[in-house]
Image 1 (tube, rainbow, N blue to C red):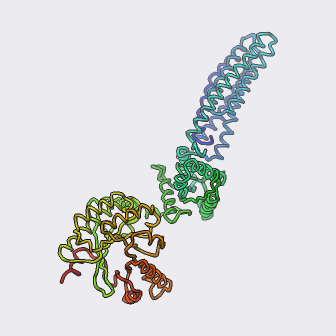
Image 2: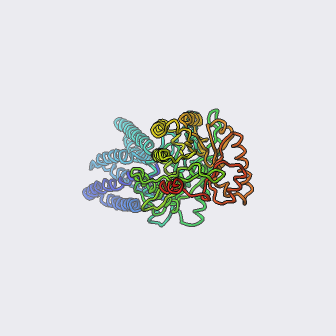
Length: 617
Protein backbone atom coordinates (compact mmCIF):
# COMPACT_ATOMS: atom_id res chain seq x y z
CA UNK A 1 0.00 0.00 0.00
CA UNK A 2 2.82 2.38 -0.80
CA UNK A 3 0.79 5.30 -1.92
CA UNK A 4 0.55 8.82 -0.55
CA UNK A 5 -3.23 8.76 -0.27
CA UNK A 6 -3.04 5.60 1.82
CA UNK A 7 -0.81 7.38 4.33
CA UNK A 8 -3.34 10.20 4.63
CA UNK A 9 -5.33 8.08 7.09
CA UNK A 10 -2.31 7.46 9.31
CA UNK A 11 -1.31 11.11 9.15
CA UNK A 12 -4.70 12.18 10.48
CA UNK A 13 -4.24 9.97 13.52
CA UNK A 14 -1.17 11.94 14.58
CA UNK A 15 -3.09 15.03 15.72
CA UNK A 16 -5.83 12.87 17.19
CA UNK A 17 -3.34 10.91 19.28
CA UNK A 18 -1.66 14.11 20.42
CA UNK A 19 -5.02 15.45 21.57
CA UNK A 20 -5.99 12.15 23.25
CA UNK A 21 -2.65 12.17 25.06
CA UNK A 22 -2.07 15.77 26.12
CA UNK A 23 -5.58 16.48 27.41
CA UNK A 24 -6.00 13.33 29.60
CA UNK A 25 -2.32 13.69 30.56
CA UNK A 26 -3.15 16.91 32.42
CA UNK A 27 -5.30 14.81 34.75
CA UNK A 28 -2.26 12.75 35.74
CA UNK A 29 -0.32 15.96 36.46
CA UNK A 30 -3.20 17.09 38.67
CA UNK A 31 -3.22 13.74 40.49
CA UNK A 32 0.53 14.02 40.94
CA UNK A 33 0.13 17.43 42.57
CA UNK A 34 -2.80 16.25 44.72
CA UNK A 35 -1.08 13.11 45.98
CA UNK A 36 2.48 14.42 46.31
CA UNK A 37 3.90 12.59 43.25
CA UNK A 38 4.19 15.69 41.07
CA UNK A 39 7.80 15.27 39.92
CA UNK A 40 7.33 11.90 38.14
CA UNK A 41 4.01 13.03 36.64
CA UNK A 42 5.50 16.33 35.49
CA UNK A 43 8.55 14.69 33.95
CA UNK A 44 6.26 12.23 32.17
CA UNK A 45 4.07 15.05 30.83
CA UNK A 46 7.08 17.06 29.64
CA UNK A 47 8.31 14.01 27.71
CA UNK A 48 4.79 13.68 26.31
CA UNK A 49 4.99 17.29 25.08
CA UNK A 50 8.31 16.59 23.31
CA UNK A 51 6.84 13.47 21.71
CA UNK A 52 3.85 15.55 20.57
CA UNK A 53 6.12 18.20 19.06
CA UNK A 54 7.92 15.45 17.18
CA UNK A 55 4.53 14.20 15.97
CA UNK A 56 3.55 17.68 14.78
CA UNK A 57 6.80 17.88 12.79
CA UNK A 58 6.05 14.50 11.22
CA UNK A 59 2.50 15.67 10.43
CA UNK A 60 3.62 18.93 8.83
CA UNK A 61 6.35 17.28 6.76
CA UNK A 62 3.74 15.04 5.17
CA UNK A 63 1.37 17.95 4.46
CA UNK A 64 3.98 20.23 2.93
CA UNK A 65 5.72 17.74 0.66
CA UNK A 66 4.59 15.67 -2.32
CA UNK A 67 6.85 12.69 -1.77
CA UNK A 68 8.06 9.89 -3.93
CA UNK A 69 8.15 6.26 -2.78
CA UNK A 70 11.55 6.56 -1.10
CA UNK A 71 10.55 9.72 0.76
CA UNK A 72 7.26 8.16 1.82
CA UNK A 73 9.17 5.19 3.20
CA UNK A 74 11.38 7.48 5.30
CA UNK A 75 8.35 9.42 6.52
CA UNK A 76 6.63 6.21 7.53
CA UNK A 77 9.61 5.27 9.68
CA UNK A 78 9.26 8.59 11.54
CA UNK A 79 5.53 7.99 11.92
CA UNK A 80 6.24 4.53 13.36
CA UNK A 81 8.69 5.98 15.89
CA UNK A 82 6.12 8.59 16.96
CA UNK A 83 3.35 6.02 17.43
CA UNK A 84 5.60 3.70 19.46
CA UNK A 85 6.72 6.60 21.64
CA UNK A 86 3.31 8.04 22.35
CA UNK A 87 1.63 4.71 23.11
CA UNK A 88 4.64 3.57 25.13
CA UNK A 89 4.23 6.72 27.21
CA UNK A 90 0.87 5.36 28.37
CA UNK A 91 2.48 2.10 29.37
CA UNK A 92 5.00 4.16 31.38
CA UNK A 93 2.30 6.15 33.22
CA UNK A 94 0.56 2.86 33.97
CA UNK A 95 3.74 1.47 35.56
CA UNK A 96 4.30 4.71 37.52
CA UNK A 97 0.78 4.87 38.97
CA UNK A 98 -0.07 1.20 39.50
CA UNK A 99 1.87 1.17 42.78
CA UNK A 100 -0.22 3.89 44.45
CA UNK A 101 -2.98 1.65 45.78
CA UNK A 102 -3.57 3.82 48.81
CA UNK A 103 -4.87 6.59 46.55
CA UNK A 104 -6.72 4.12 44.26
CA UNK A 105 -4.69 5.46 41.34
CA UNK A 106 -4.11 1.88 40.21
CA UNK A 107 -7.75 1.69 39.12
CA UNK A 108 -7.35 4.80 36.94
CA UNK A 109 -4.08 3.43 35.58
CA UNK A 110 -5.72 0.10 34.68
CA UNK A 111 -8.64 1.84 32.95
CA UNK A 112 -6.28 4.17 31.06
CA UNK A 113 -4.20 1.25 29.86
CA UNK A 114 -7.30 -0.58 28.63
CA UNK A 115 -8.54 2.61 26.96
CA UNK A 116 -5.20 3.15 25.24
CA UNK A 117 -5.35 -0.43 23.90
CA UNK A 118 -8.83 0.15 22.47
CA UNK A 119 -7.69 3.44 20.91
CA UNK A 120 -4.67 1.70 19.35
CA UNK A 121 -6.81 -1.06 17.84
CA UNK A 122 -9.16 1.54 16.35
CA UNK A 123 -6.77 4.24 15.11
CA UNK A 124 -4.00 1.96 13.88
CA UNK A 125 -6.24 -0.63 12.28
CA UNK A 126 -4.93 0.20 8.79
CA UNK A 127 -1.38 -0.82 9.74
CA UNK A 128 -1.01 -4.41 10.92
CA UNK A 129 2.61 -4.07 12.04
CA UNK A 130 1.81 -1.08 14.23
CA UNK A 131 -1.34 -2.25 15.97
CA UNK A 132 -0.04 -5.74 16.73
CA UNK A 133 3.19 -4.61 18.40
CA UNK A 134 1.59 -1.64 20.20
CA UNK A 135 -1.29 -3.74 21.55
CA UNK A 136 1.18 -6.18 23.04
CA UNK A 137 3.16 -3.24 24.47
CA UNK A 138 0.04 -1.88 26.18
CA UNK A 139 -1.60 -5.10 27.35
CA UNK A 140 1.43 -7.11 28.48
CA UNK A 141 2.08 -4.90 31.56
CA UNK A 142 -1.55 -5.47 32.58
CA UNK A 143 -1.23 -9.25 32.22
CA UNK A 144 1.97 -9.25 34.28
CA UNK A 145 0.51 -6.94 36.93
CA UNK A 146 -2.59 -9.10 37.49
CA UNK A 147 -0.54 -12.28 37.62
CA UNK A 148 1.77 -10.76 40.28
CA UNK A 149 -1.12 -10.02 42.62
CA UNK A 150 -0.81 -13.60 43.87
CA UNK A 151 -4.55 -14.04 44.31
CA UNK A 152 -7.06 -16.19 42.47
CA UNK A 153 -8.88 -13.17 41.02
CA UNK A 154 -5.52 -11.78 39.89
CA UNK A 155 -4.90 -14.89 37.82
CA UNK A 156 -8.44 -14.70 36.45
CA UNK A 157 -7.92 -11.04 35.47
CA UNK A 158 -4.60 -11.95 33.89
CA UNK A 159 -6.31 -14.59 31.73
CA UNK A 160 -9.17 -12.19 30.95
CA UNK A 161 -6.59 -9.57 29.88
CA UNK A 162 -5.06 -12.06 27.47
CA UNK A 163 -8.53 -12.88 26.13
CA UNK A 164 -9.26 -9.16 25.77
CA UNK A 165 -5.95 -8.72 23.93
CA UNK A 166 -6.91 -11.61 21.64
CA UNK A 167 -10.29 -10.04 20.90
CA UNK A 168 -8.67 -6.68 20.09
CA UNK A 169 -6.10 -8.37 17.87
CA UNK A 170 -8.75 -10.48 16.14
CA UNK A 171 -11.07 -7.50 15.49
CA UNK A 172 -8.21 -5.27 14.31
CA UNK A 173 -6.71 -8.01 12.15
CA UNK A 174 -10.00 -8.77 10.38
CA UNK A 175 -10.77 -5.10 9.88
CA UNK A 176 -7.25 -4.60 8.52
CA UNK A 177 -7.69 -7.58 6.19
CA UNK A 178 -10.95 -6.13 4.88
CA UNK A 179 -9.34 -2.72 4.35
CA UNK A 180 -6.35 -4.23 2.56
CA UNK A 181 -8.58 -6.42 0.38
CA UNK A 182 -10.83 -3.52 -0.60
CA UNK A 183 -7.84 -1.30 -1.20
CA UNK A 184 -6.14 -3.91 -3.34
CA UNK A 185 -9.25 -4.51 -5.41
CA UNK A 186 -9.78 -0.77 -5.86
CA UNK A 187 -6.18 -0.08 -6.87
CA UNK A 188 -5.15 -3.22 -8.77
CA UNK A 189 -6.10 -4.97 -11.96
CA UNK A 190 -7.76 -8.26 -11.11
CA UNK A 191 -6.29 -10.19 -14.04
CA UNK A 192 -2.61 -9.22 -13.96
CA UNK A 193 -2.21 -7.94 -10.40
CA UNK A 194 -0.70 -4.69 -11.71
CA UNK A 195 -1.90 -1.28 -10.64
CA UNK A 196 -5.06 -0.19 -12.47
CA UNK A 197 -6.03 3.07 -14.15
CA UNK A 198 -7.54 4.49 -10.96
CA UNK A 199 -4.35 4.02 -8.98
CA UNK A 200 -2.28 5.42 -11.84
CA UNK A 201 -4.34 8.62 -12.05
CA UNK A 202 -4.07 9.10 -8.28
CA UNK A 203 -0.33 8.52 -8.44
CA UNK A 204 0.05 11.20 -11.12
CA UNK A 205 -1.26 13.96 -8.83
CA UNK A 206 1.67 14.00 -6.35
CA UNK A 207 4.12 13.29 -9.19
CA UNK A 208 2.78 16.35 -11.00
CA UNK A 209 3.38 18.48 -7.91
CA UNK A 210 6.90 17.12 -7.39
CA UNK A 211 7.88 17.84 -11.00
CA UNK A 212 6.65 21.42 -10.68
CA UNK A 213 8.29 22.07 -7.31
CA UNK A 214 11.65 20.47 -8.15
CA UNK A 215 11.78 21.55 -11.83
CA UNK A 216 12.21 17.93 -12.88
CA UNK A 217 10.84 15.76 -15.67
CA UNK A 218 9.43 12.28 -15.93
CA UNK A 219 9.01 9.82 -18.80
CA UNK A 220 5.82 7.97 -19.64
CA UNK A 221 5.52 4.90 -21.85
CA UNK A 222 2.22 3.65 -23.27
CA UNK A 223 2.39 0.08 -24.54
CA UNK A 224 -0.19 -1.54 -26.78
CA UNK A 225 0.27 -5.13 -27.93
CA UNK A 226 0.18 -5.62 -31.69
CA UNK A 227 -2.52 -7.89 -33.16
CA UNK A 228 -3.59 -9.10 -29.71
CA UNK A 229 -7.21 -9.28 -30.90
CA UNK A 230 -6.14 -11.88 -33.46
CA UNK A 231 -4.87 -14.13 -30.65
CA UNK A 232 -8.08 -13.64 -28.68
CA UNK A 233 -10.23 -14.43 -31.70
CA UNK A 234 -8.25 -17.42 -32.90
CA UNK A 235 -7.20 -19.08 -29.63
CA UNK A 236 -9.87 -17.85 -27.25
CA UNK A 237 -10.00 -15.34 -24.38
CA UNK A 238 -8.55 -17.79 -21.85
CA UNK A 239 -5.28 -18.03 -23.82
CA UNK A 240 -5.42 -14.27 -24.41
CA UNK A 241 -5.74 -13.64 -20.66
CA UNK A 242 -2.81 -15.94 -19.88
CA UNK A 243 -0.73 -14.12 -22.47
CA UNK A 244 -1.58 -10.78 -20.83
CA UNK A 245 -0.51 -12.17 -17.46
CA UNK A 246 2.78 -13.37 -18.96
CA UNK A 247 3.42 -9.98 -20.59
CA UNK A 248 2.57 -8.21 -17.32
CA UNK A 249 5.10 -10.34 -15.41
CA UNK A 250 7.83 -9.49 -17.89
CA UNK A 251 7.06 -5.79 -17.78
CA UNK A 252 6.96 -5.81 -13.99
CA UNK A 253 10.25 -7.70 -13.70
CA UNK A 254 12.04 -5.46 -16.18
CA UNK A 255 10.72 -2.12 -14.92
CA UNK A 256 11.02 -2.96 -11.21
CA UNK A 257 12.27 0.00 -9.11
CA UNK A 258 12.53 2.11 -12.29
CA UNK A 259 8.95 2.82 -13.34
CA UNK A 260 5.46 2.62 -11.88
CA UNK A 261 3.58 0.09 -14.03
CA UNK A 262 -0.19 -0.10 -14.53
CA UNK A 263 -2.63 -1.79 -16.87
CA UNK A 264 -5.05 0.74 -18.34
CA UNK A 265 -7.33 -1.96 -19.73
CA UNK A 266 -7.41 -4.47 -22.57
CA UNK A 267 -3.88 -4.93 -23.90
CA UNK A 268 -2.67 -1.45 -22.92
CA UNK A 269 -0.01 -0.94 -20.24
CA UNK A 270 1.45 2.33 -19.01
CA UNK A 271 4.69 3.12 -17.19
CA UNK A 272 5.91 6.35 -15.65
CA UNK A 273 9.34 7.06 -14.18
CA UNK A 274 10.15 8.95 -11.02
CA UNK A 275 11.32 12.53 -11.33
CA UNK A 276 14.56 12.97 -13.29
CA UNK A 277 16.91 15.72 -14.36
CA UNK A 278 16.28 17.00 -17.86
CA UNK A 279 19.41 15.99 -19.73
CA UNK A 280 20.25 14.44 -23.05
CA UNK A 281 21.43 11.34 -21.18
CA UNK A 282 18.05 10.79 -19.48
CA UNK A 283 16.28 11.23 -22.82
CA UNK A 284 18.51 8.63 -24.43
CA UNK A 285 18.13 6.26 -21.49
CA UNK A 286 14.33 6.51 -21.62
CA UNK A 287 14.34 5.74 -25.34
CA UNK A 288 16.80 2.87 -24.90
CA UNK A 289 14.70 1.52 -22.03
CA UNK A 290 11.65 1.49 -24.33
CA UNK A 291 13.62 -0.36 -27.02
CA UNK A 292 14.83 -2.95 -24.50
CA UNK A 293 11.27 -3.33 -23.27
CA UNK A 294 10.24 -4.15 -26.83
CA UNK A 295 12.88 -6.88 -26.92
CA UNK A 296 11.48 -8.33 -23.69
CA UNK A 297 7.96 -8.39 -25.09
CA UNK A 298 9.11 -10.01 -28.35
CA UNK A 299 10.61 -13.05 -26.64
CA UNK A 300 8.45 -16.13 -27.35
CA UNK A 301 5.71 -17.16 -24.91
CA UNK A 302 4.73 -20.72 -24.07
CA UNK A 303 1.04 -20.74 -23.12
CA UNK A 304 -0.27 -24.26 -22.55
CA UNK A 305 0.48 -26.02 -25.87
CA UNK A 306 0.88 -22.79 -27.83
CA UNK A 307 4.14 -21.03 -28.68
CA UNK A 308 3.20 -17.41 -29.21
CA UNK A 309 5.07 -14.43 -30.60
CA UNK A 310 3.83 -10.89 -30.10
CA UNK A 311 5.22 -7.41 -30.53
CA UNK A 312 4.12 -4.02 -29.23
CA UNK A 313 3.81 -0.39 -30.21
CA UNK A 314 5.17 2.08 -27.64
CA UNK A 315 4.52 5.77 -27.29
CA UNK A 316 7.14 7.69 -25.27
CA UNK A 317 6.35 11.08 -23.76
CA UNK A 318 8.46 13.48 -21.70
CA UNK A 319 6.36 14.95 -18.88
CA UNK A 320 7.26 18.38 -17.58
CA UNK A 321 4.64 21.09 -17.20
CA UNK A 322 1.83 18.73 -18.13
CA UNK A 323 -1.83 19.19 -17.30
CA UNK A 324 -3.85 16.74 -15.23
CA UNK A 325 -7.11 18.02 -16.71
CA UNK A 326 -8.96 15.48 -18.85
CA UNK A 327 -5.93 13.17 -18.71
CA UNK A 328 -4.27 15.14 -21.52
CA UNK A 329 -0.90 13.58 -20.72
CA UNK A 330 -2.33 10.15 -21.55
CA UNK A 331 -3.87 11.48 -24.75
CA UNK A 332 -0.51 12.81 -25.85
CA UNK A 333 1.40 9.59 -25.24
CA UNK A 334 -1.53 7.79 -26.87
CA UNK A 335 -0.92 9.87 -29.99
CA UNK A 336 2.69 8.71 -30.07
CA UNK A 337 1.65 5.09 -29.57
CA UNK A 338 -0.83 5.19 -32.44
CA UNK A 339 1.80 6.85 -34.59
CA UNK A 340 3.99 3.81 -33.87
CA UNK A 341 1.13 1.58 -35.04
CA UNK A 342 0.64 3.62 -38.20
CA UNK A 343 4.38 3.28 -38.95
CA UNK A 344 4.05 -0.49 -39.11
CA UNK A 345 3.90 -1.41 -35.40
CA UNK A 346 6.68 -3.01 -33.33
CA UNK A 347 8.41 0.30 -32.65
CA UNK A 348 8.83 3.30 -30.37
CA UNK A 349 7.65 6.80 -31.22
CA UNK A 350 8.50 9.83 -29.09
CA UNK A 351 5.77 12.43 -28.69
CA UNK A 352 6.92 15.85 -29.85
CA UNK A 353 5.59 19.19 -30.97
CA UNK A 354 5.55 18.29 -34.67
CA UNK A 355 3.55 15.14 -33.97
CA UNK A 356 1.15 17.11 -31.80
CA UNK A 357 0.64 19.73 -34.50
CA UNK A 358 0.08 17.03 -37.11
CA UNK A 359 -2.52 15.33 -34.94
CA UNK A 360 -4.22 18.64 -34.22
CA UNK A 361 -4.37 19.29 -37.95
CA UNK A 362 -5.83 15.82 -38.50
CA UNK A 363 -8.50 16.53 -35.89
CA UNK A 364 -9.28 19.87 -37.50
CA UNK A 365 -9.50 18.23 -40.94
CA UNK A 366 -11.78 15.54 -39.51
CA UNK A 367 -14.10 18.13 -37.97
CA UNK A 368 -14.14 20.25 -41.12
CA UNK A 369 -14.70 17.17 -43.26
CA UNK A 370 -17.90 16.53 -41.34
CA UNK A 371 -19.04 20.07 -42.09
CA UNK A 372 -17.88 19.90 -45.69
CA UNK A 373 -19.80 16.71 -46.39
CA UNK A 374 -22.92 18.17 -44.82
CA UNK A 375 -22.53 21.34 -46.87
CA UNK A 376 -21.63 19.59 -50.14
CA UNK A 377 -18.49 21.70 -50.48
CA UNK A 378 -16.34 18.95 -51.97
CA UNK A 379 -15.76 19.04 -55.71
CA UNK A 380 -15.18 16.23 -58.19
CA UNK A 381 -12.55 16.87 -60.87
CA UNK A 382 -11.98 14.76 -63.98
CA UNK A 383 -8.58 13.84 -65.40
CA UNK A 384 -8.69 12.70 -69.04
CA UNK A 385 -7.28 9.38 -70.22
CA UNK A 386 -5.86 8.83 -73.73
CA UNK A 387 -5.11 5.95 -76.03
CA UNK A 388 -1.87 5.26 -77.93
CA UNK A 389 -2.86 7.82 -80.57
CA UNK A 390 -3.37 10.56 -77.91
CA UNK A 391 -7.12 10.40 -78.43
CA UNK A 392 -9.29 10.89 -75.34
CA UNK A 393 -11.04 7.65 -74.39
CA UNK A 394 -12.07 8.23 -70.77
CA UNK A 395 -11.41 9.97 -67.52
CA UNK A 396 -10.81 9.35 -63.84
CA UNK A 397 -12.97 11.09 -61.23
CA UNK A 398 -10.85 12.67 -58.49
CA UNK A 399 -12.24 14.44 -55.42
CA UNK A 400 -10.91 17.89 -54.51
CA UNK A 401 -11.36 19.97 -51.38
CA UNK A 402 -10.81 23.71 -51.11
CA UNK A 403 -11.32 24.98 -47.55
CA UNK A 404 -11.66 28.68 -46.73
CA UNK A 405 -9.20 28.47 -43.82
CA UNK A 406 -7.03 25.44 -44.60
CA UNK A 407 -6.74 26.18 -48.31
CA UNK A 408 -6.43 23.37 -50.85
CA UNK A 409 -6.09 20.00 -49.19
CA UNK A 410 -4.43 17.12 -50.96
CA UNK A 411 -6.42 13.88 -51.24
CA UNK A 412 -3.30 12.18 -49.89
CA UNK A 413 -3.96 14.08 -46.66
CA UNK A 414 -7.72 13.94 -46.14
CA UNK A 415 -8.58 10.58 -47.75
CA UNK A 416 -6.62 8.53 -45.13
CA UNK A 417 -8.34 10.55 -42.39
CA UNK A 418 -11.69 9.79 -43.95
CA UNK A 419 -10.69 6.10 -44.12
CA UNK A 420 -9.67 5.96 -40.46
CA UNK A 421 -12.76 7.75 -39.17
CA UNK A 422 -15.32 5.96 -41.35
CA UNK A 423 -16.22 9.21 -43.13
CA UNK A 424 -15.03 7.56 -46.34
CA UNK A 425 -18.45 5.87 -46.61
CA UNK A 426 -20.21 9.20 -46.71
CA UNK A 427 -17.52 10.72 -48.91
CA UNK A 428 -17.62 7.74 -51.26
CA UNK A 429 -21.40 7.96 -51.58
CA UNK A 430 -21.15 11.63 -52.45
CA UNK A 431 -18.50 10.99 -55.14
CA UNK A 432 -20.45 8.04 -56.53
CA UNK A 433 -23.65 10.04 -56.85
CA UNK A 434 -21.91 13.07 -58.40
CA UNK A 435 -19.93 11.06 -60.95
CA UNK A 436 -22.88 8.92 -62.04
CA UNK A 437 -24.97 12.03 -62.46
CA UNK A 438 -22.24 13.76 -64.51
CA UNK A 439 -21.63 10.70 -66.71
CA UNK A 440 -25.34 10.34 -67.31
CA UNK A 441 -25.53 14.01 -68.34
CA UNK A 442 -22.64 13.63 -70.75
CA UNK A 443 -24.21 10.54 -72.31
CA UNK A 444 -27.51 12.41 -72.69
CA UNK A 445 -25.69 15.20 -74.50
CA UNK A 446 -23.92 12.73 -76.78
CA UNK A 447 -20.48 13.10 -75.18
CA UNK A 448 -19.62 9.45 -74.92
CA UNK A 449 -16.48 8.18 -73.13
CA UNK A 450 -15.37 4.58 -73.32
CA UNK A 451 -13.94 4.46 -69.78
CA UNK A 452 -15.07 6.18 -66.61
CA UNK A 453 -12.96 5.41 -63.54
CA UNK A 454 -13.99 6.02 -59.90
CA UNK A 455 -11.83 5.33 -56.85
CA UNK A 456 -13.47 2.99 -54.34
CA UNK A 457 -12.37 2.46 -50.74
CA UNK A 458 -11.95 -0.99 -49.23
CA UNK A 459 -14.37 0.15 -46.53
CA UNK A 460 -17.00 0.68 -49.19
CA UNK A 461 -16.41 -2.79 -50.61
CA UNK A 462 -16.84 -4.36 -47.17
CA UNK A 463 -19.89 -2.23 -46.37
CA UNK A 464 -22.97 -4.36 -47.07
CA UNK A 465 -25.34 -1.56 -48.30
CA UNK A 466 -22.75 -0.46 -50.88
CA UNK A 467 -23.88 -3.02 -53.49
CA UNK A 468 -27.48 -1.91 -53.17
CA UNK A 469 -26.40 1.73 -53.46
CA UNK A 470 -24.52 1.03 -56.70
CA UNK A 471 -27.42 -1.01 -58.09
CA UNK A 472 -29.92 1.79 -57.45
CA UNK A 473 -27.68 4.38 -59.13
CA UNK A 474 -26.96 2.10 -62.10
CA UNK A 475 -30.65 1.49 -62.73
CA UNK A 476 -31.51 5.15 -62.34
CA UNK A 477 -28.77 6.65 -64.55
CA UNK A 478 -27.95 4.02 -67.18
CA UNK A 479 -29.89 1.99 -69.66
CA UNK A 480 -28.81 -1.42 -70.94
CA UNK A 481 -27.30 0.27 -73.96
CA UNK A 482 -25.13 2.43 -71.73
CA UNK A 483 -23.59 -0.63 -70.08
CA UNK A 484 -21.34 -1.11 -73.07
CA UNK A 485 -19.56 1.87 -71.57
CA UNK A 486 -16.93 0.78 -69.07
CA UNK A 487 -17.61 2.00 -65.54
CA UNK A 488 -14.43 1.17 -63.67
CA UNK A 489 -14.02 0.97 -59.90
CA UNK A 490 -10.39 1.49 -58.96
CA UNK A 491 -9.22 -0.34 -55.85
CA UNK A 492 -5.77 -0.41 -54.25
CA UNK A 493 -3.73 -3.53 -53.59
CA UNK A 494 -4.48 -3.16 -49.86
CA UNK A 495 -7.74 -4.92 -50.63
CA UNK A 496 -5.71 -8.13 -50.71
CA UNK A 497 -4.98 -7.86 -46.97
CA UNK A 498 -8.68 -7.95 -46.06
CA UNK A 499 -11.33 -10.66 -45.84
CA UNK A 500 -10.73 -12.06 -49.31
CA UNK A 501 -13.83 -14.24 -49.43
CA UNK A 502 -16.08 -11.30 -48.72
CA UNK A 503 -14.15 -9.03 -51.11
CA UNK A 504 -14.42 -11.52 -53.96
CA UNK A 505 -18.16 -12.06 -53.41
CA UNK A 506 -18.77 -8.29 -53.36
CA UNK A 507 -16.72 -7.70 -56.51
CA UNK A 508 -18.48 -10.48 -58.40
CA UNK A 509 -21.90 -9.12 -57.46
CA UNK A 510 -20.85 -5.67 -58.64
CA UNK A 511 -19.45 -7.21 -61.81
CA UNK A 512 -22.91 -8.57 -62.62
CA UNK A 513 -24.17 -4.98 -62.45
CA UNK A 514 -21.69 -4.01 -65.20
CA UNK A 515 -18.79 -2.77 -63.08
CA UNK A 516 -15.19 -3.43 -64.15
CA UNK A 517 -12.40 -3.40 -61.57
CA UNK A 518 -8.96 -1.89 -61.88
CA UNK A 519 -6.04 -2.31 -59.46
CA UNK A 520 -4.62 1.13 -58.72
CA UNK A 521 -0.90 1.66 -57.87
CA UNK A 522 -0.17 -1.86 -59.08
CA UNK A 523 3.18 -3.25 -57.95
CA UNK A 524 3.50 -1.26 -54.72
CA UNK A 525 1.52 -3.34 -52.26
CA UNK A 526 0.26 -6.89 -51.84
CA UNK A 527 0.36 -8.08 -55.44
CA UNK A 528 0.08 -11.80 -56.01
CA UNK A 529 -0.60 -13.88 -59.11
CA UNK A 530 -3.13 -15.89 -57.14
CA UNK A 531 -5.06 -12.70 -56.40
CA UNK A 532 -5.10 -11.73 -60.05
CA UNK A 533 -6.49 -15.14 -60.85
CA UNK A 534 -9.08 -15.04 -58.08
CA UNK A 535 -10.37 -11.47 -58.32
CA UNK A 536 -12.54 -10.25 -61.24
CA UNK A 537 -10.02 -7.67 -62.46
CA UNK A 538 -10.29 -5.98 -65.87
CA UNK A 539 -7.26 -3.69 -65.83
CA UNK A 540 -4.20 -2.61 -63.82
CA UNK A 541 -2.71 0.86 -63.35
CA UNK A 542 1.05 1.12 -63.23
CA UNK A 543 2.02 3.27 -60.28
CA UNK A 544 3.39 6.70 -61.17
CA UNK A 545 6.50 6.03 -59.05
CA UNK A 546 7.64 3.53 -61.66
CA UNK A 547 6.76 5.90 -64.51
CA UNK A 548 8.87 8.65 -62.92
CA UNK A 549 11.91 6.36 -62.97
CA UNK A 550 11.78 5.72 -66.72
CA UNK A 551 15.05 6.64 -68.38
CA UNK A 552 16.92 7.07 -65.10
CA UNK A 553 16.18 3.97 -63.08
CA UNK A 554 16.78 0.56 -64.62
CA UNK A 555 14.79 -1.14 -61.85
CA UNK A 556 11.71 0.93 -62.73
CA UNK A 557 11.96 -0.18 -66.36
CA UNK A 558 12.32 -3.82 -65.31
CA UNK A 559 9.33 -3.47 -62.98
CA UNK A 560 7.18 -1.92 -65.71
CA UNK A 561 8.14 -4.67 -68.11
CA UNK A 562 7.25 -7.32 -65.51
CA UNK A 563 3.90 -5.71 -64.69
CA UNK A 564 2.94 -5.43 -68.36
CA UNK A 565 3.99 -9.01 -69.02
CA UNK A 566 1.87 -10.26 -66.11
CA UNK A 567 -1.11 -8.14 -67.15
CA UNK A 568 -0.95 -9.31 -70.77
CA UNK A 569 -0.86 -12.95 -69.63
CA UNK A 570 -4.08 -12.34 -67.74
CA UNK A 571 -5.65 -10.39 -70.63
CA UNK A 572 -5.81 -7.21 -68.57
CA UNK A 573 -5.88 -3.64 -69.87
CA UNK A 574 -2.86 -1.57 -68.85
CA UNK A 575 -3.20 2.04 -67.72
CA UNK A 576 -0.12 4.20 -67.13
CA UNK A 577 -0.73 7.07 -64.73
CA UNK A 578 1.62 9.91 -63.92
CA UNK A 579 2.88 10.40 -67.46
CA UNK A 580 4.55 13.82 -67.35
CA UNK A 581 7.00 13.84 -70.27
CA UNK A 582 6.94 12.95 -73.96
CA UNK A 583 9.83 10.51 -73.44
CA UNK A 584 7.80 8.63 -70.87
CA UNK A 585 4.81 8.45 -73.23
CA UNK A 586 6.99 7.14 -76.05
CA UNK A 587 8.64 4.54 -73.81
CA UNK A 588 5.27 3.32 -72.53
CA UNK A 589 3.97 3.08 -76.09
CA UNK A 590 6.89 0.81 -76.83
CA UNK A 591 5.92 -1.30 -73.83
CA UNK A 592 2.49 -1.72 -75.42
CA UNK A 593 0.43 0.09 -72.76
CA UNK A 594 -3.23 0.68 -73.60
CA UNK A 595 -4.27 3.89 -71.81
CA UNK A 596 -2.29 6.90 -70.63
CA UNK A 597 -2.96 9.56 -68.01
CA UNK A 598 -0.90 12.38 -66.51
CA UNK A 599 0.18 16.01 -66.68
CA UNK A 600 1.83 15.45 -70.06
CA UNK A 601 -1.71 15.31 -71.43
CA UNK A 602 -3.70 17.31 -68.89
CA UNK A 603 -4.36 17.79 -65.21
CA UNK A 604 -7.64 17.02 -63.48
CA UNK A 605 -10.27 19.62 -64.42
CA UNK A 606 -13.57 20.78 -62.97
CA UNK A 607 -16.63 19.47 -64.81
CA UNK A 608 -17.25 22.71 -66.71
CA UNK A 609 -13.60 23.09 -67.78
CA UNK A 610 -13.47 19.44 -68.88
CA UNK A 611 -16.62 19.84 -70.98
CA UNK A 612 -15.39 23.05 -72.59
CA UNK A 613 -12.00 21.58 -73.48
CA UNK A 614 -13.00 18.11 -74.68
CA UNK A 615 -16.65 18.30 -75.71
CA UNK A 616 -16.74 21.65 -77.50
CA UNK A 617 -16.47 21.21 -81.24
